Length: 274
Image (cartoon, rainbow, N blue to C red):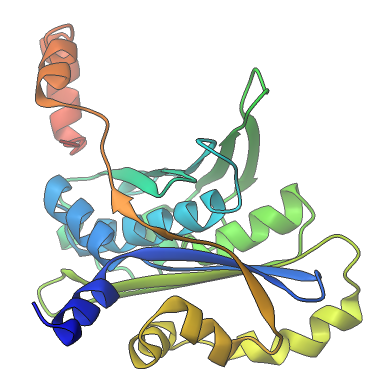
């Protein structure tokens, strides 16, 4: 393999990066998680809408996790009363991410004008499993738009009082398969003024082509150098991998403890994580 082939191969790998502005006023995380999203769609045999939402949820979880320490982890859950029952993602700071979706088997027959129709009503839950904490830190807000981006932005503002902007870009091909997935989280640090935030707001107000920016600039660091209106220091730059801790043997051991009615109910709800 020559240098160009190696470079191209490395550029395609999933990565997540976190940076801090030289002024210390802002921190940013960005991710390309296309392969992880594609892996999750394949392993869980997901149709377009569940795969779209899971790709976004996993991207968001990985970006929050990179702000954490060691093997601390983050769990994001969107629970609804519509054909989408749950979108779950868990990520560790070390780059591992996993997730699943519980949904109506007939979801392919639904036509959603807005993604919130997939949930109808529900809640968005953020759980942080931290060092030296006996219990997870949990925050819950009501789902408003159901697109993950807006709900996570609202969570940080309502539950943690942190001015935050979350942008998640997920693309599907004509067959309903994930073709690209990326995201960026921008947060104001303590002591940042409203004027500081307003000065850089125009940078993000029209940032809708994140996938293309990453592709053109080859990697996340170069993309951030183009996008961000300030100099920054890189805090972390890590691989991202879809990683499920379960095994076939463990799954069978747990499955045989369930009754027929429970297994049948799981089948009806398309709870087919594997």
